[in-house]
Image (cartoon, rainbow, N blue to C red; front, side, top):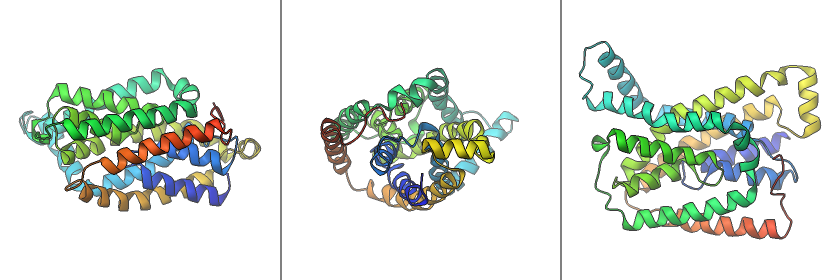
Length: 290
């Protein structure tokens, strides 16, 4: 992977992570278009997501530190567990369990067979339509203070679907939130908070597992021969993803205050159809790297 390709993929990750359009699908497809026959890989995708999740940490820093602080105070018996911030801490933990368990159980399929671009195209279209339906018919009255254990688990199961490229982490959880009656802002806010443990755990796991080999001469040579990203490419893409991602999250949270998700629904459907057309024309390899 060249320096320019790393810059482009970092931009793609930053632009798409917080929008309900699937960042993993975009990184997968753009990576294939930049370097035909080569998939950037699930590990590369997971690691550069650390950049965008760092943007979430900064954006929600006051909320996160307050929730963590009050959660530990509750463990020490200094606050009741019914405190809203303490409950949110527990609900983020509970909601993170499904994606953690399923991610470990199906790691091989996630890294390989589920990266088939026909699956990606289908998920873009299907979950785009589901998002549009939820945004149109759901009552959107509930706020985060009404979040309970059942809803937290359902949010978590929806987030776990994002293990399939094309679903979208934010898109899946926001759709579930809307269908449960939460407002756009509440669903998006919880989706972003819920993603923090999952993305950092996944990214750090992949980094510890796959990156150390790049510190050896043999590892760097093998990665270059296979067209896989170098350590410098991963760092560059991650830093760019952070900077662009922070700007996007600020814009997105303001956008959904007054606008529907219609533009994202249309984009997902069109993107899915275009990808199917590219696959049908043989312009991209559905199984590159799988």
